[in-house]
Image (cartoon, rainbow, N blue to C red; front, top):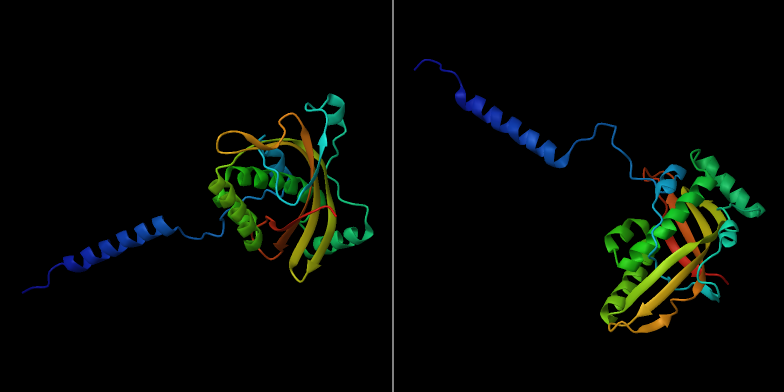
Length: 238
């Protein structure tokens, strides 16, 4: 027989090309221009975050009742902008972090930390574990999910409103190798009510604003492409 056109080879080549295209479609391919994870710790992103009202009182927060339910215009004017600190040790720690990462800015971090605070509280309130997962360390995530499960098992219903953040400031700053840590104090005002499965109020008062003081520690590997910081510890004011 004479040599004919190798249709079998052509067919196999077309099949291989098709499989390669399908594989690329499913897995994608790196081009060097992939977008990094969203950065909630930058000023521009934090400013664009919508201020949601439903939050939950987290464990380990000191609180005290405030008489007026509705904050006045004067009260709103007194709210402090996020501030760094006048503490020399904290300033030294911030400079150390900035020396290791030229893109670090304490003011931008505080804006992002404020957005993260609201996001974490909100997602904890609704039991959104998938959103919480990348924002929390393993230990903190386990604590939060345990609290969510206990709430679900008891059938409790949470009704919470964030009135506002009164103060956000850095208490501690440090760098250990490439791991930066920043401890932030959040003073917030919330209305928090817990109801049982039958809708009966078992904790809180819908007519009282409660002042919460939460101290959170954030950590980040400065070599990571992810610009976000992870919540590694929560505690109360001593």
